[in-house]
Image 1: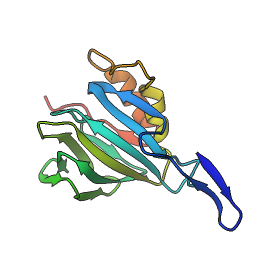
Image 2 (image 1 turned 120 degrees about the vertical axis):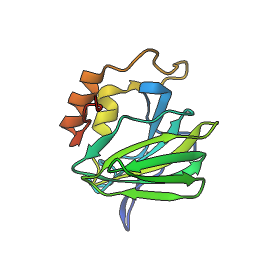
Image 3 (image 1 turned 135 degrees about the vertical axis):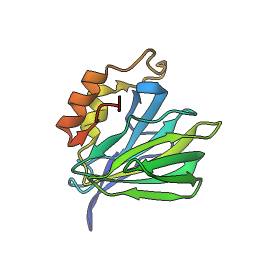
Length: 165
């Protein structure tokens, strides 16, 4: 929710547990806390919940860097196919644009992660391929539509390379 402040312009306030949320493939949920519309395009912030052993496919952001702050759980990040970083609660991982990244929740419980995309704009991907969370909705079942994911990612400056043979 935006609130007008007469001295500094518009501020953004999103209470705990609120924000527009989308179910993504694998039962991962992304909730927008600040969008590029809120920040004049500077950044987007999502709070994401990852089930155990779930993560996105390896991908490269060409227009945004991603910064991850682990709120709860244990995530493993593999960058450029070789460097592995394990991050636990309270850890921060920043991945520059142009770097191949692969990550997942390696813990036994759901992981909660605050993700900063800079600059903003990648929220369009979530809106295009995700399923809006409603009070009664559950994560989508079945395998993701890979062609749709790849095409949508490309529109937002992200490549999902094919898996190695």
